[in-house]
Length: 605
Image (tube, rainbow, N blue to C red; front, side):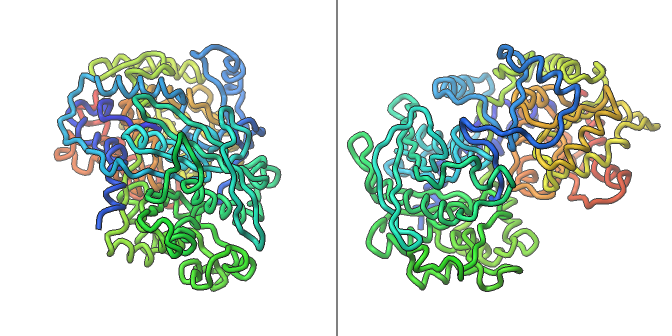
């Protein structure tokens, strides 16, 4: 997920706003330098895919989308291919040379960016990224994409960079480089390290280290794909990963030297929550890694990694001193004081805590958004040891160079380009080819968090003609994979509204690109959203995002709160979070601001 420069911004609102929303896209690229200043200044989710192992999707596939998919599944690159995935964040470009070419094209873009540039700092400090998944080798969602981005961006900026992740399968190009023994669960366990070097040119590159042990070689990353239940030994698996990751910089001789002790560790989410704890109690207290730092990144506070202390004793199971309980003991309505909370322990033991957007950082410090950890995070904030940095988007998300859309376009040609992309999208997905219809899209997981229930409620209202002339002439495309209940709703919506609704159950990354280029509006009524990426894709392609005012959506979309004041800066609509209610009431509130956007002359709809 290499980061896009702000040269392809919300073209639908015209060049007047380009620099304003570009700040959102610039932040993550800048953050790779700022992260180091920040450090050195004073899932519980279930996945059924790993590389080389694919299981059938759940949900349904409507006849029209199945026909489109089947007709194009084995055709050339200009056709759409159905790819079953839990994520709408697939990156289609993995080749380092291709990435470098895209980055170069962006740097030569005709739009001049006059904002201050950020300079990299502490380039002599090696960076070690530790994640339970990393794109393209293993992925359930955004965590893998961001971990892969860390590995790319830090290396491109000149840092010696290592990314450590489990070896869930035999990865091409990864070769055995060494081993270590880890004491856990009362005995020693041998883990092997496999190494893959990705040369990024100009002397830059990333060392990927895959930790190999029999406990990782399964069909799913976190859950058994047969029943969807979490593996009972996940605490063992990810404890093993974190200790192995702490050993790797010390013992692995890579191109003539080890990474050494003076490194920055970046741990991600609950699966690596024990890394800051081991870093503090096992290493620093024994005069190892004394000058290193450990940063912990919260990608989703809803998944915390909770286990019973009585079942997994801190000393005899984890090999930590008894006093580590002060960090590891958490609270839970079901487990009470017998709760070990890996996420809260990481927040307490790490030198710094980051999350994926400034507004989400504020939300999780509140009782409503902190999921029980708000006081810990408030304390971290008062110490200036917590911050939020907005994620960025990949360089490939640029309509000027995107090979997956029928017509490329830029600021000067976006009206003609989007019209052509809209026509192609309507034809491909079986919708009526009506250039005047408002084409509304949704792309994401089919679950409550993403607000799918709100969208399915308002479809009848959207399709009903009324006096203002705004509603009725509307088409809807919904694409995603997840819970069967919502999958059925998508299928039913299409079956009852042929030519006006496409319910695409599953995920095709090429169709996602075509949707962002062809749709007029993108809906993201998420109940909460740590960051979100589709709303940024939408702005890059001149598609108006309609999003809930929450998390990173609030940071990355500028709303039309006052028609006169905001007409030159608004990039979308941000209705406040809605509750389940009657479709007419919900939709009236959610789309009032959207209707206002259609009245702004600069939109030229």
